[in-house]
Image (tube, rainbow, N blue to C red):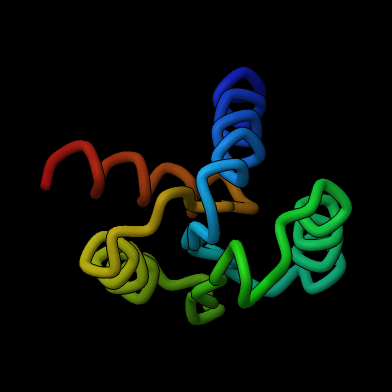
Length: 102
């Protein structure tokens, strides 16, 4: 998982030399975690990924309901997000199963 994030970060940062490229990140929060989301966004910003210029965030609906989270995964897939930032094991499992089978 950590290796994937490092590789993704490298690809994002190295793409800036090509021009203004927008990446989309789905925020899968399951039941909140505003400080974690803020820290994630701040980390990308500190590396030069400015919201609205280089990266676009799609906020998933919060709620500890599997069906709700599967609909969030469906939305992220339809939006063709480049990365899903998931904060819980159940949420990550929903995303993994959904993206793998569809």
